[in-house]
Length: 293
Image (tube, rainbow, N blue to C red; front, side, top):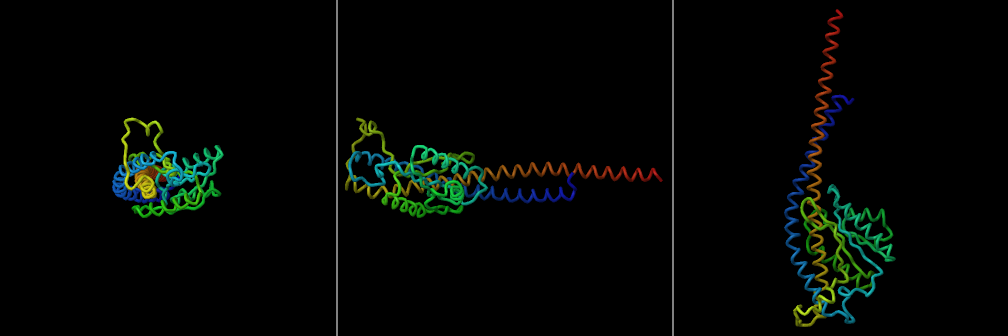
């Protein structure tokens, strides 16, 4: 049985931990409000731009010499995966879910005879992939470190991916990220960035589909808008991931604070029982000594 001194030390240690987790929960809650607002504000713009580019690209279906960002290389042999994780832990299963989904996707592609390359964003994903698939990692990108994500970060990443695509370093590019649902739920999601997903042939040829005339022209518009669309989609996924991280951390720290409170209650009860037992034993010894006299 632990001594009273040991129990007091453990109670003090758990109380200190509870203060830390409670403070981290409040910080995550404050950051979550801003991150959630930005993520939700970016969704309609990213969805509208993706839909517009898909409809615009559908009009060029079957043509030769299309931009790589639209049509890819014509193959699907080399896949570039971009998992988005955080730089810090203490966020429950936020990073583990992305690592697990990336691992499953790698094994699935390899089973199909595909070549996989990895460009992780965030330290947690990079560390995991370097342990499990170090030969597949071509490079890595540092995360935001918990700070607000500027559009310039997505623009820089988009330019890097576009340059790799133009050099033919991959055929298909897919980003894996946590889509923010609510504080309790972040859904691991994969989205293909290159080549651009186009609507089905029957949908594009529907009689009810509107007919557009473009000025200055489809090819010129695509060459201008495709790089921008890539950056916008990356920015939206980065915002979703940032909001999911704060939501997961808030939930994890809330659970940790509750568990610390329960541990304090159990330790306090054990301390009081041990103290009462010691007092009872001392009284028995005193009474026994007095009777012996």
